[in-house]
Length: 418
Image (cartoon, rainbow, N blue to C red):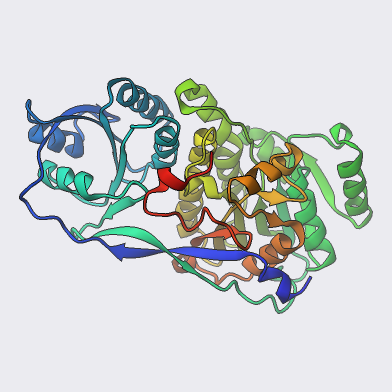
């Protein structure tokens, strides 16, 4: 694998772009119906204060700083009520997320208008109404504590050059979660063969359950000294017991674990959402709770572009990956020497669950450019050279060349995949 392989993957990072603050005139008020995680929340109170009986009917879902299990039901209820009544739907949160799910609902339900607004400080109801009126469908607006409003633009970035072994110190262990999946096995092979690392594979699937081709790949890894551990990542005790068997300090984590499942938001229940995020979000949390944060040098979490751009039938999966990004970047603050990056991949070809589900050709017809296996694994090695420290923790969107769906157009619903 060489540097040219990495150029076959396009990489983007979000760049905050200021949004002009709308004036006070010319924006009719709303007649709000509020669904709040905390009824006494100041944002909910601001909306109720700004409520006008003769205003345009709108539904607001108000969430807090972190996503709670009960938030799933609020998001789904808001989407269902707005779809049924033709009302505008607004998500206000302080970090809990949920925009990926609601944008997918809007894509699946023509006429549903969704606005997502994240705030770090108090916002009065009048300004919320102004921002809702002026936001583009694809935007998630961010209101800083000082009142500055921004949205995410996307700038191409060059991935770090890979000048040598990915492991920070000789003898360090690289833990690959979801290690018996198609991407986990390939990642482990590259880390062992190309980067000279010592992978440990952690997966809920037992080696005996693998089909012939992945079983052959696993045997090659085992012959090279790779350790395989079987544990349910959603069970913290099972994870802790498994990681007790890991030799030496864990220097790097490549978090590939996850479940892929589709279905329209209108037919999704809270249990579906909880199941989709369990391995991705809870699994990462359980692993990091066991590892020594002072020893960890690299963390790469495998996310998905569906957290950024809505896709029909993939709202729940998009939400799981949105919450994975939030959790990973939050945890970075407690990893003083670690290079932390969330890799939000487009669909892979050659391995991975989309490949196994034979969805790659459909993705191409939708305008997506799959990430090929060799360039994608080269990009992974480059990501393991990300600058260390919490200040550099970031998310990166990675697509194949020629992708027509990213960066997303301003009217995302108009040009999104079918």
